[in-house]
Figure (cartoon, rainbow, N blue to C red):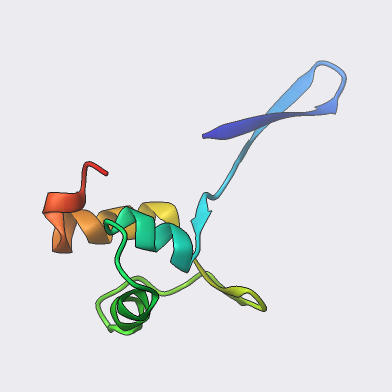
Length: 79
């Protein structure tokens, strides 16, 4: 996914956007599991590291979570 931004007239650049997900989105990606189960899974050492820990909670790169799901929960990879 990209966003085109005009730097100067006649000059375009592409800025890559990072899609982020929080615990709620991860719950959905994992088939609607409980908040407690999301905490257990995201705390495990084989789960991707969050890219930030905000006041509202941790956030992960969506691509990292999707890759983890493909490897560890392949039955959910299509969701």
